[in-house]
Image (tube, rainbow, N blue to C red):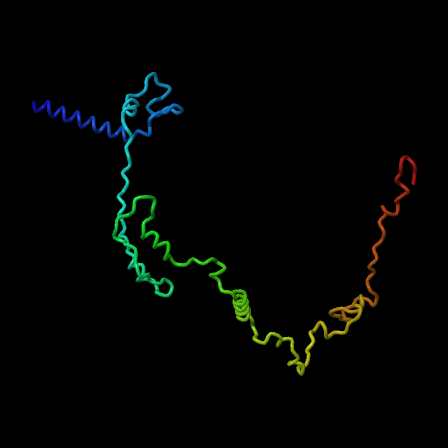
Length: 221
């Protein structure tokens, strides 16, 4: 008897495991458009897991329980606000009563929307004299980059009494360069003759015979 009960319990346990596995893998079930992995078109018959998936129901995800925030009362909201901007009313609405039936918002949500901080636009949040401040900041950055505080001091006439020292290129006399007359170093003792070397080359014989030996279209030019 005990062995039968143990076998029965084991079978039930295995059946529960299969059922849970089928519910867990329910997304692998084949559809009308696309066959699943257990229903391959190359097989003659579908896998037994396909039938198991058809019988099983998909698992439902358990949503985590959201902790309800402690509802802030009206007195807490009025305590953090100033009496000038938000004057305290004489008769306050009842807070601890049950919410009215119907499409009404929660009182704390309404109070949060009413006493929320001001969110000004960009035009209101920026100062009016922003352009003036930006120009001053730009002048300050330019002043930091200056080498000399007096801007036109290098171009002023404070150094007129100093004597101008010309460079070597400007100290020489300007004029046309005389070719073959000026040399860097001349030593007449080493000259071979008084005359200069002849720099004219003799003409080539090929150029002197041009037009005499060559023909153009069978005629001597």
